[in-house]
Structures are given as structure tokens and as C-alpha cells.
Length: 116
Image (cartoon, rainbow, N blue to C red; front, top):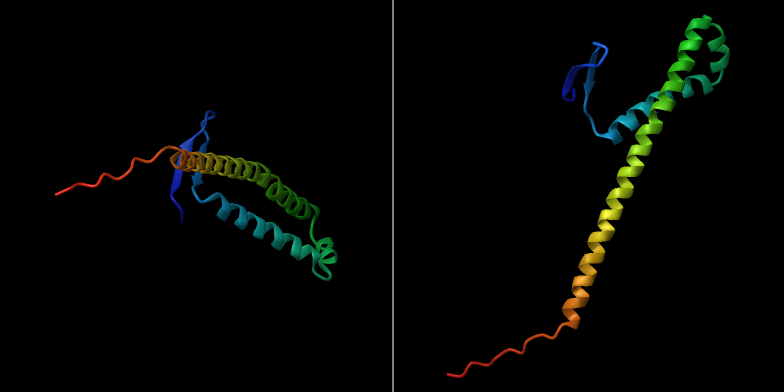
């Protein structure tokens, strides 16, 4: 298990969390959502769903909805992080390119032959 952290929020509720890379978290949640959808999409899946009580069906769809909705801020954060990373890489590459061009344009001192 990843590093577990227990904190108390402003309302006095215990909040238990663990850290993991965002990509790993997103993949895990996407797999869970996909397995729920696969269950319903399988032959006879919707018919079998009809056999369950309404509260169970409501909970299952609520879970599917929450799994999908929780990914939106994660994907936005990941997109922002990637944009920032590529921007920083571009800036570094531009600086390196400019430094190389300036080095080529600046006159190089001629080597001085030392006589013996």
C-alpha cells in the first residue's frame, strides 16, 4: 500500500488518503469503470440488472457516474502539468539553441603558438 495519511478536515471529519502517481490512479479507476460497463454490456447484462432491487441499481449507476466524474479534475490537472512541462522544455531548448547560435557568431580567439 502507498503511504497512508490521516488528517482532520475543517468539520472535524477524519480524512484517510494515500498517495500514488496520478497516472496509476486514473488507470485503476478507469479499469473499475470499464469492468462495471462490461458487466452491463455483456449479453444479458441489462436483463440481469433488472433482477436486482432498485436501491442496488441506483447505487451501481451512482458509482459509475462518480468514477467518471472524478476523472475530470484529474485529467485537467494532468493536462495542465503536461502543458507546463512541454512549455518549460521548449524554453530550455530555445535558450540552448540561442546560446549555440551566439557561440557560432562570436569571434573565436586564435590559438597562440608558443615558441621554445
